[in-house]
Length: 258
Ligand SMILES: Cc1cc2nc3c(=O)[nH]c(=O)nc-3n(C[C@H](O)[C@H](O)[C@H](O)COP(=O)(O)O)c2cc1C
Image 1 (cartoon, rainbow, N blue to C red):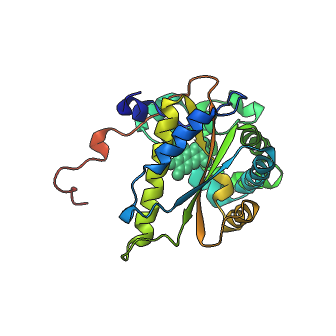
Image 2: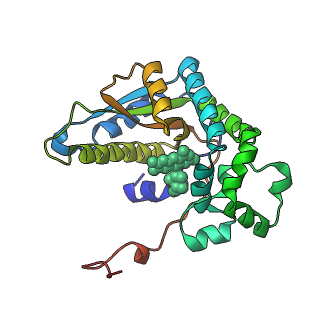
């Protein structure tokens, strides 16, 4: 697959995966793609943990479940989240950013066919749902995400060895940038191999959860846990996505004074 096609066709895959494991050849290609990512002074600060056995998957699924339940009780999280939720395709396409509510959360039955105006109102008051979160409203979405984590053929835990820092005051910044490049290489390679990938951020949000992950997977304290990817062969093609128009983020010579 041509690199432009891979960049444009890549999608975050939130659906289920085929049950089969990733072929050894394909896994090697994903790792090779990661290996050739650029980094400052070629320090290559990354280390990947490939998790294919149920013990590790279950531990991460359990952490994810607890983290999502907690998110549903956090008014600030709900409020910040609602800013980026789009209630229908039209709004999503027009705004060119954010995520589609129905793709992110399975709404409770009474809300699934609710008028969009009502959903918009609910989103505006998202922080008040923390009360429902305390009554267990997060358990259903949390259980769904946890199942997806548990059943993914491959989980890739991406870590950064902070001892491999480059020179200069910007060292940490440049290292994080190179981690993003490694991840994008993996995503593009996965797209070419018809492997779906989803970031699973919930279990990495809090320092306490990252500490648990560190202990579970023997990650040294000098390493940063960067991200967790859920991967597998897709059952069906992924859904659509949207982007801002180029005029919304490209400036010529200078930004306009604001
Ligand atoms: C750092 C990072 C964290 C993300 N975390 C999540 C996540 O926890 N769950 C999820 O479904 N998607 C997650 N995403 C995917 C974004 O929602 C997605 O890239 C964006 O909506 C654009 O959609 P697309 O990737 O299909 O083009 C994450 C993406 C990035 C780069």
